[in-house]
Image 1 (cartoon, helix red, strand yellow):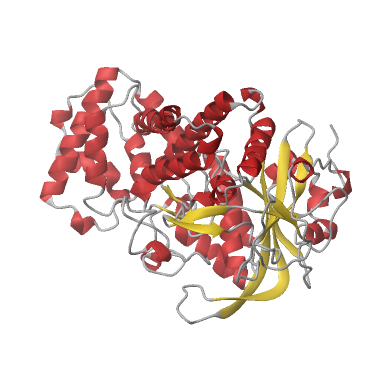
Image 2 (tube, rainbow, N blue to C red):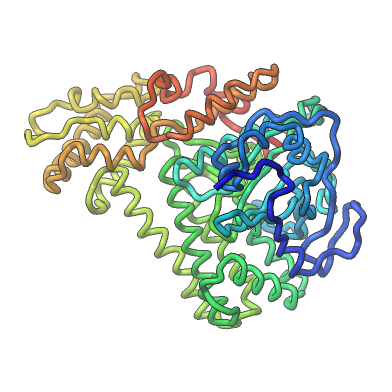
Length: 532
């Protein structure tokens, strides 16, 4: 079927604003928006839109031909300077818990939805500009985004998709031709940075906080309208809304959230700011702010400077935070169900789904046919003893040759040698450490031998779930540094690399290596703020 060659040919449905109540005030003034799910608002026009990258896969999902994506009209539309036929821009109202505290109304402060497209497969896809100017929900902020954070969001959205992690997508990354003032670490050192806009794409951007705001205000009528709309639009297989369907819907949200968190833990992704307003009702990774990737395995690591003292959103705490966030969603929808026991049973689905998913995931990471608790628990303890690159460790473990020879025949030195590339500080490998990991490796080899898994089969399984390439923090920062000098080639290079994160890629081995020493403590490579 021929691709769409002009944006005006996109089919917009815009059901959200058609079926839900909107803000009668059409002014773009910061305010509390009462009794409405959204406010109409236009993107702010900028001086010089310029496309610097786009995702061909997302364009294909929207049925767009490459030539339209590379046109000036495309850059104008997806930077916010023009609207194509059918677009009806709006920002949504929601609240949320931030770092465990209720924050009241938040809303799309720097995100503007252009509308909902129906593609030729019948999929509903919301197009959303991030950084296209202020909305009624911007509070004291300017609604803009900088190139630095936009590059990170664009690349990570697509990297996560190709890793198999549920996520929102990114269609395009554009420059505005204007400067934006940002204080990167909130330390009194603001500076001008290039302005940029990312077009994000998802079936829905509805969040846990979208429901919380109406319950907090006692607007149960509007809460019910939004829940009913969400079920009919995004969960139609559950049937017509009713108390029983509300429970089934909440259970499905719990399952989808558990699946997402298992994937995060599998690849070493740390979201950094798991507020309830950053939790997707579809179980998608949403809002790529101060995220980061585990390099040396450290469950206590968080990439977010704002969370440096509490470490609420650290890697090892993500499963518990997701459960806490789901409890807040349960509280929000409780007025529609009012059966505490059934609600508790529903939220227990998360714990059950996560535990089952996590066990299956760990078995796959180790190439086992079934989960082995003692092997998994001991390995995760060992990985923390010295600085061990998580991504490299599992790939090297997969490459180890395991045959029928007795594991006892191999010395600790022989066993650990294939893993050496995973260690940041070899001097940390004391005799005690070598003995402990040697003992673990022998137990692991015995388990593989007991399962009689052919070595090639084990390697293929492990390499299908343990990526060779992830968007390491220093890689994203290097692309940002080049982009700041007007060189956008590394953005495209990383986009190409991350399309095949599990494959061996000739000439790309440098991107699979450990974090370089210069990136250990550098801003943007180790920690970031919420403005990053």
